[in-house]
Image 1 (cartoon, rainbow, N blue to C red):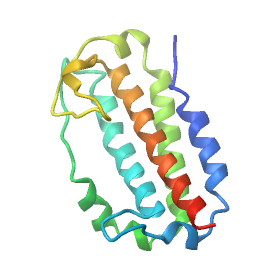
Image 2: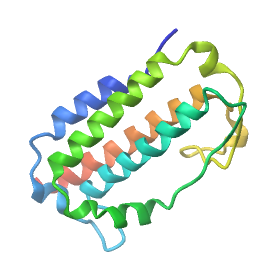
Image 3: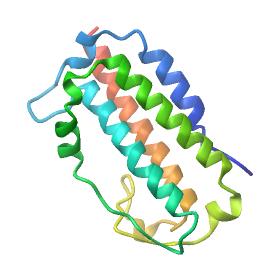
Image 4: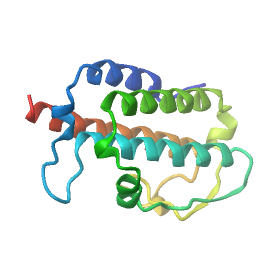
Length: 160
């Protein structure tokens, strides 16, 4: 079965939901060390960028070394807080549509093939206790995205 783990539907629905949100709603930081909605969306762009490379490389290698990245530093260096919300939203949507297409076009045998994956902490799980497959990495990506979309919704609703 070919799938994109509903990434396309989740992305398009969230894009429509967040399209008319104001800059005031997305600029608010709930604490000095907490991210605003803009910064969370920026983190999701960074996640899409990093996972895109992982998903492509995992299709033609038996051993995938996943390099972690300093999430807070990425968000800070790119100054998502001072970027335009709609520009970030469009970038996030387009990147996830690209990933959705990549997921859809990954053959089931490739998605389900066991890989030796090192250097990766799955969203909320110990990778040693989870399947080492590209399909699992893709599912984990969607779960991570949904978690952060929930955080954005909470921040936006607090600012209404």
